[in-house]
Image 1: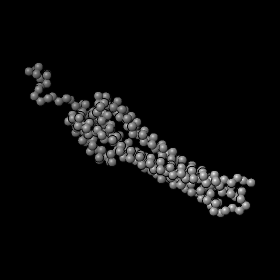
Image 2 (image 1 turned 90 degrees about the vertical axis):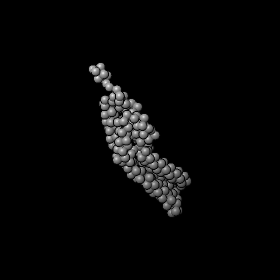
Image 3 (image 1 turned 45 degrees about the horizontal axis):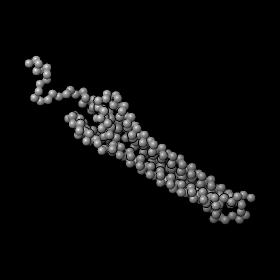
Image 4 (image 1 turned 180 degrees about the vertical axis):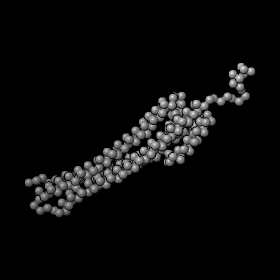
Amino acid sequence: MGIDLTVVTRIVGTVIYCALGLIALWGAFLVIMIWRRVAQSRFRNEEEQEEFLDELEQGLQAGDYAAVEELCEGDPRAVPALALLALANRKLGLAKMRTLLADRFQRDVLADLEYRLSWVYTVIKSAPMLGLLGTVMGMMGAFSQLAVGERVDPSQLADDISLALITTAIGLAIAIPLVLCTASINVRIRRMEDLVGAGIARLLEMLRTVSARPAETPRGREPAEAVESS
């Protein structure tokens, strides 16, 4: 005689349904947070970034660093934050500054996004596995009824088989949309990297031009050499 696993199957099935529901909510929450994080870290398009850099260049050309810092402060996007960091370290060489900006962007933005995406990938892997566990438990419950009962109740047998099918379907229904969402997010991250890379290049070029420009002689005063020669 076999062992009737009907009660165990019902309990485990309920636990699996609850776990799948929590995983679905957690995955959706992570995707929304990553999507918002990417949107907050980048300009919507290249034209908007160029407008910001044009305004930044005007302030640098005028030597008004206070206005430039005011323009960048409080802006959560990557390029303004990196511009503020570059202004604070403008005495460094361009090579060191380029390394500093790249490291800060990698650490503060990309590493955070990769960390959040790793949790989404965990959800994508876990949901089908939980669905497969429900499939195994449902089939075990169905076969246990066939093994212990001379007369099997078709409704109970159908419940176990439905558990096996529904949990698998739910697991796939969670994983497939998340795969599509992560693919879209990765595309947005690659575009953000391209925009930020172009912004850093132009920012360094602006700082190089400003640092290479000779200091202007104040009006009303002649250079020292001219005074001595006279």
